[in-house]
Length: 65
Image (cartoon, rainbow, N blue to C red; front, side):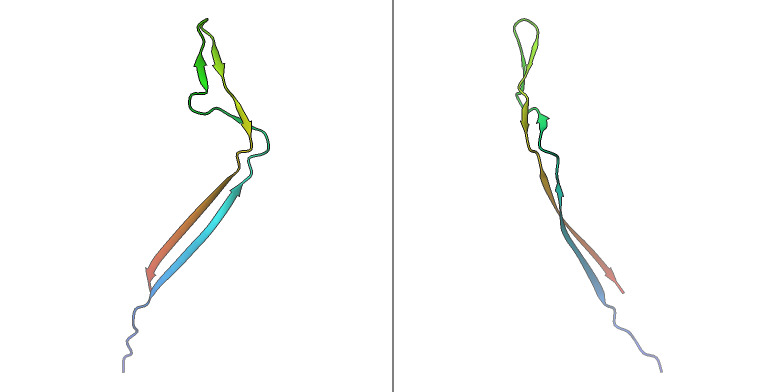
């Protein structure tokens, strides 16, 4: 006597978030933050602030067993 097994589909879900602490004094330039001066020099409008970031992610894996 043989027994048959029904196929099952497995679904795995991965949810999460990462917090990136980039420090208190990050210096960066925004678009338009570099200007050419008439005397041939360059002026940089540097911004200094916090630049922390949260990255969210979702992962799904589907398989049959």
